[in-house]
Image (cartoon, rainbow, N blue to C red):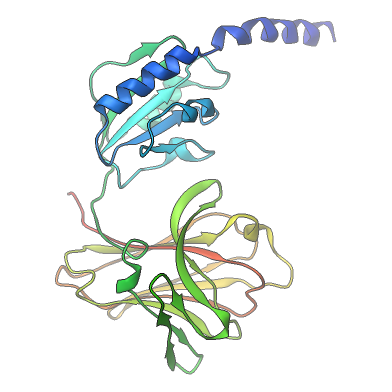
Length: 290
């Protein structure tokens, strides 16, 4: 007990030394305001460096959550790292060893009191050629019955409105703590699917289609009176399927290659007992940098 008490005292005396002055937050914000470019992202490390959000420039993408340290940030050419290396469990050397893979640092780190600012070129970036969330009006949505018949949904200017109270719209939500710009989807149940279709013209120039899917927020905890969900990605005659088990809170990914001249693409959600759950669906086309 004496050793525990001593350790607590040491911790209490040590913690103030990690304090970040408001002037240091403002100095970092000034650099980002002057030097950041469109498409940059700011990564907070460790993710509990959250107070920095209050000072960073508006309009700049900021990421700091449970899984952000290992994210690829595939849509960002450059990554600014705002770090508090003296915080408990920051482990900067271990973080940088993993983070720097296929990334190159631009210039030297800059210190602002207990804050450290670094800038990296992101070699993991993959150019985006199509985004269903950004181009929702160009997407066709229908309900597909078990016998294959389709009932088209109606575009009302902001979302696709379907029978059985189904609606496909776009919003930003978290799946397992990470934010995504999602197609908000569900399915009527009893074997009827909600299907999103892209024309060959929409995805022309893409080299692969990527379908990500997961359950929004608390929906991921539901296990009773709901069934597993099945997601299917089909490009022309190629098809892949994965089952999302009820209670699985992670984001999953399916990919298929696509011809540069474009091919019809379909993404389908089928769930027999949907319950009161909403699924986050990200459907994007990519072009390789290799």
